[in-house]
Image 1 (tube, rainbow, N blue to C red):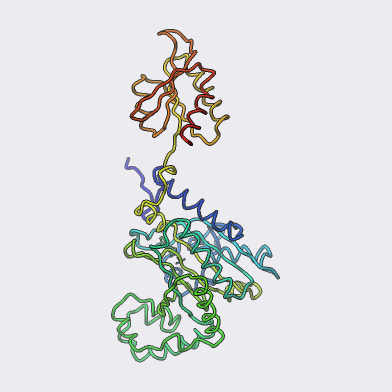
Image 2: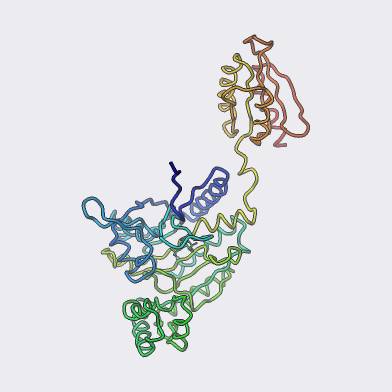
Amino acid sequence: MSKLQSIKGMNDILPDQSPTWQYLESTFRKVVARFAYREIRFPILEHTQLFKRSIGEVTDIVEKEMYSFADRNGDNLSLRPEGTAGCVRAADQHGLLYNQTQRLWYQGPMFRREKPQKGRYRQFQQFGVEAFGMAGPDIDVEILQLGTALWQALALTEYLSLEINNIGSAQDRQRFGAALTAFLEPRAEQLDEDARRRMYTNPLRVLDSKNPAVQEALQGAPELADFVSEESATHYQRLRELLESLGIEYRENPRLVRGLDYYNNCVYEWTTESLGAQGAVCGGGRYDGLVQQLGGRPTLAAGFAIGAERLVLMLDSLDKVAASYRQSVDVYLVAIGDGSTEKSLALATALRGAYPQLRILSHCGGGKYNNQLKRAFASGAALAVILESEAAGSEVVEAARIRRLDDSGETVRVALDAVVATIGEYLTKSEA
Ligand code: AMP
């Protein structure tokens, strides 16, 4: 029978790769805690309607990329393609948005049926932050400070650059969209099928087209910047002033629009050149209309989402994860002969109790001395503790050898009841 494989674009994270993930996850958690954000968890599966109403019916995600299916009772459900919609649904459903501010973070898998390639997968992890109830731009800047602090903590600052843009209010974009439709109508022949349809349903999405013919047809099209209201422009101006006063570097990119419909005013993206084509590692902005659009009271909101796989790729290729993170065993217990098994397992318990920070591996399954020692070396442990019966055929184990698993091969013999204390001395020496 042929073996089953994982689904294309949905990756396993193997033990050798997990240290980078753990490092990234723990660093993210520390940084969000420093900014007093609190964790929210919400389901991976939601009603399809939630994503249609938030991300937008006429977007690549909703039109082409969602994993949707009819539940057994006929409900239309989808695997979440991003976190903001579910976060807003959960926060509103449980009354977290009424008359109060919230600073929240989440982490988890998202699903989009995109063409898999380096940095682009069908199941991927996002870390996100969302802030509710604040008009900004101070909160927008706080969120950008949080991103900046994360890059600093990961030592990635020099590889990332921040791009920002003002995409105006929903009304501004409606007026701009109408102007865009009017501009495109006489050029319909130059457009492809997608663009011809979107020209009426969601003209801003025509701007995203990768088709050179469509980009050609867009030459001389109206510019969003000319439709942005004064209020939105003032917000954006103040945001830039605050960023400058804090020394947060940015570049303005008037073409930055984002692939989700719910954004307004300032949007931003951190990109890198070290990953090739999939250079965006974090994207976000304000989405002041979304809560109301999903049936809640009008609630100001802003946030961003980080693509974890892309950061993992960066951390690994730039060798940013400390070797100690990759260490999985500190002390390897070698047990030779029947009599040593019980002593070795008991010693492991004693060591784990005395030094909870140490990773103790107790060899199981028996085997010859040389084979066990080979495993001890291969484990990366710094020390081996070898228990062996006093004489062939005897079950008496009274002493142990503690061996450094380095070139020195230094070995000491100590009484069994002195092993725990002696390991403690080794620890003090290696810390000194
Ligand atoms: P978005 O939700 O589209 O704004 O994406 C936010 C971030 O998630 C992007 O900047 C990427 O880093 C990451 N991302 C989006 N789609 C994928 C994907 N298919 N595979 C891996 N990462 C992704």
